[in-house]
Amino acid sequence: MKFLLRNPLPRLVKALSRKERLTFYVALIVFAVSLLAYGALLVKTKTYLVPSVGGTYREGIVGQPAFINPILPTGASTETDRLLSRLVFASLVDVADTIKHSADGKTWSVRLKDGLRWHDGEKLTADDVVFTVDIIHNPEVRSWLQGSFEGVTATRVSELEVEFALQDSYAFFEQDHLASLRPIPKHIFADIPVINFTRSSFGLAPIGSGPYEVVSHEKDSRGFVENLSLQSNPDYLDRPAYIENLVFKFFKKEPDLVSAYNLGQIDGFGLSTAEGLSEHPILIRHQLHYLASSRYYAIFINPNLAPDVLDDRSARGALSVSTNRAELINFVLGGKGRVFFGPTEGSPEPTTTFNTDALKGLALKIVVPDELFLTKTAEKIKADWEFLGVQTEIIIRSSRDIQEDVLRNADYELILFGNIVKENNDLFAFWHSSKTVFPDQNLALYQNSKVDSLLETYRKTFDKNTRTAILREIGSRIASDFPAIFLYSPDYVYVSTPGLGGFDDDKVINTSDDRFEDVTSWFIKSRHSLRAPDTVK
Image 1 (cartoon, rainbow, N blue to C red):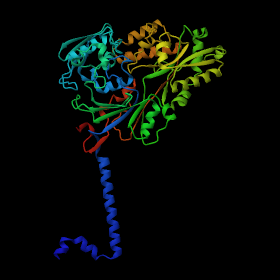
Image 2: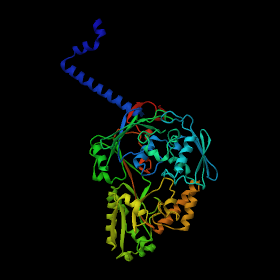
Image 3: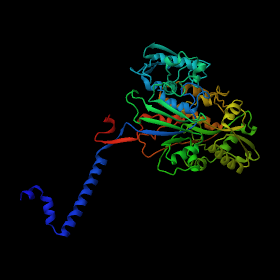
Image 4: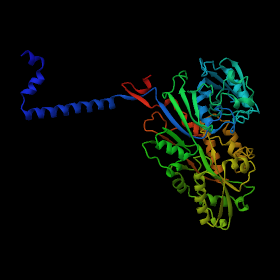
């Protein structure tokens, strides 16, 4: 009796018949499975999946790091260096406690957060910011930011305060100039002659203040950097990045990225357009992130060299309306892009009907950079135009030739090229009549006094509603003049493993490094919590 009381279940089961025991065990298994399923459902529906710190993420990049520094010029510093600099060096906007401007927008005051440190433990102060701006101004450096900060002076107000004085009011100084300014450490570079910057040991071992710091790199016997390892900065602003280690692996061509991903050698990579994936498909599990891009492509018409018939607005309009942009996006970009009829996405589609008879017998030459999606675009446009009787010759040139010869000498009748217009939609650099001489970017050599006035007013206007109205008029006026055949804005594509979380699919890509804008929120490790993510530390 005492045993039965102590162990009732075994005695009761033993007392059952064989058929009753079978029924009992089946019921017990069903109960256990149901309990587990219900528990899993509770975990899924009543808890939150929140990021955890840790893990290693491997990113593939086409190119080589040369000198990881955020202010050196293109040539001394590569696009790969710019991308890595974004992770190693913090933006001034990120490390600012407050940013204020005067009523006329010509004076900007920046106060740094207290307790900022460089990766080597030294304090980051206003002296570093002023030093960085002085280096940008130094003509021997030839910084890629020199044009942006021309006429801008930086003055130390206190250990944590810097004042910027502008010659002209500029409404986008914070989101454009200050956001792109990534201070470099004065205590590292003050005693190094600027001509020796790229020869110093800090090329692949930089000291920054960003979310990640470089810990090592590996080269092969030919000097090719195969990989570069970063680890999260534990003292970065409010909290360190969730992913503890980032490893960058370097490749020579875009197809190599897809191959490396299919072999499990990398966890993510970016492509400028979706076209590359149609040529080289991904074979294993992945996520595709299609991100809106602020760049658009157009065929710019050089009025000095193009045939005289294109001096007539109606002839340019006929070329524009006969170009099937939707087909281009489907054929070239796999449907991943947006149609453009002007210099902004909001530029209206022309409603005028143009007579294409004047185009018959016209001979045109289009210079095209040697990039597959652009050459495919040109071939499709050629077919459209030749259907109208326009003889179209495509001249393919290397990217270097485009920069050093074609653009420098404005040696083109028409050129298929792209403009990167940041989110502020400041079109001054691309369409103001003062920006027609290389290295300025008015590729259509466009001149319109009314548009000039609107462009000047737009960048001095702080009220967003007023700016929106001005931008709408700018876009409409330029589009209706047809100084270029506007085509499309391709989506930027980021490929990642399914396990990557925290990636913002709504961000806009200006340049390839923008994919890391929210890198501190990425995570590959997670846990369940009863509290919502914003309450979990």
